[in-house]
Length: 201
Image (tube, rainbow, N blue to C red; front, side, top):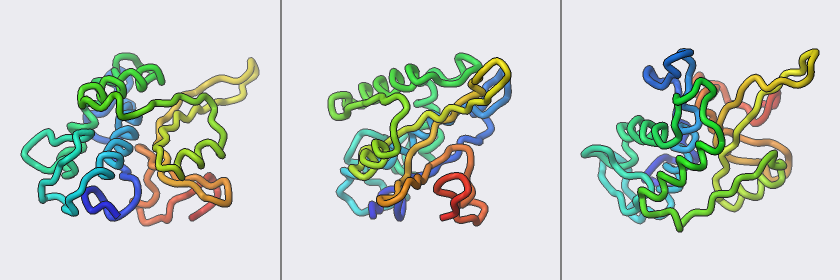
């Protein structure tokens, strides 16, 4: 356990905050920066050597830094971190959400601002297999997934939209995946969550 950020597991911040909407459509728009914030928060905890949790201040690694007089992993730090990422990802500059090019460019910009650009390799993999996601996750290399939603219409397949999530875990022996989803949160309502549609876990 890394005391600095949570008892266990990837953080699961929610995107449904009052100001995180596309102005023209009033739809939630911050899934990409929130999913990235979950990943960065987790990565930032690994090098921390002090076994202290907020409100104690302990911040030896600059991937996530405090935006105020509190610890970098204080709950007060979530909103400003997401807001900075949203700006770098150009969220709400169009009504179609963040493209993957915007996400990559924004993440590169963020890492550069922290003087950590050379410390991380960013890999873009179109249509990754489950085996690839599993191996990356088991190797503690965080995975951000861009989920596409499609519908078969009389004229062919039409993309209805997309949604960014972070991979929180995978089953070593079956094709089950646990997601840190910025929008849906069954566990918050007392449910055990789902590892894939129709399979309770």
